[in-house]
Structure formats: C-alpha cells, structure tokens
Image (cartoon, rainbow, N blue to C red; front, side, top):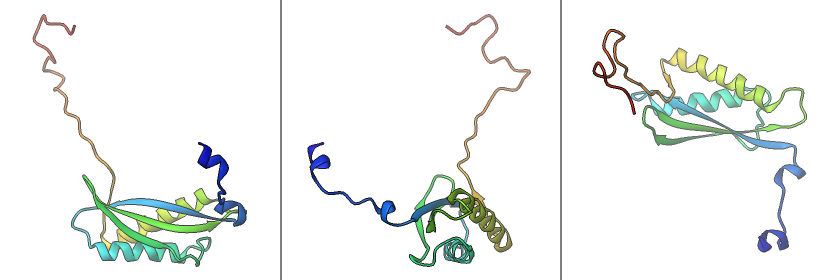
Length: 130
C-alpha cells in the first residue's frame, strides 16, 4: 500500500476524453477466422463514433469450449451525444448483420442439462432425498 500512496500515478482518462472499449465475440468453429477478424475490424472502422486513432484492433484470442474467441478493441470519445454503451450495441448489430451475410455463426456459451422425462420418477418409489 505504501508504494501505491507514495509513487506517482497517471490517470489516462483524466487527461483525455477517449476511452478504450472491448467487445468479445464467439465465432462458430469451422468459420474462416481471417474473414471474421476482417469483418470485425471493418464494422469498427465504419462506425461514426469509433475513433480512427488509435486504430481499432482485432485479436483471435482463444479456442474456447464452444466457439473461437475474438476480441475487438476500439476507442470512443466521452462527452458525445452517443454514449459508449450505444456504440457497443451498434457494433453488435453491425457484426451480427455482417456475419450473417458472410455465413459466419456467432456462438455463445451453451450448457445443456439433462432431466428425466415427466413420466419417469426421479427416485425409486418410496425413497426420499435426505
């Protein structure tokens, strides 16, 4: 704690109205990864409120459980009529549209749970949970 209190710190957002944003996108396995990355970058470059400098970047982050994981990193300026969450939402819509046109599926983490059929008892007759 003393190091934190005694040393100089820089608040990057205090001196600049620009803030960094990230969108994480899961792409279906089997998709063209370079095309997906290109479309993500294109969506960011075409949005009116995404800053041109620093340039938006796309990273192929990982092979996830159920999807290829990408992250889109971009900058927006605070104080505009349009807030950062609106830009995030706009980008998600644009990405969905572009991916659909290109035949690229967007994946989310899916978890399946199995259950007994309604006509099958969950426990043998006469037995109770303890």
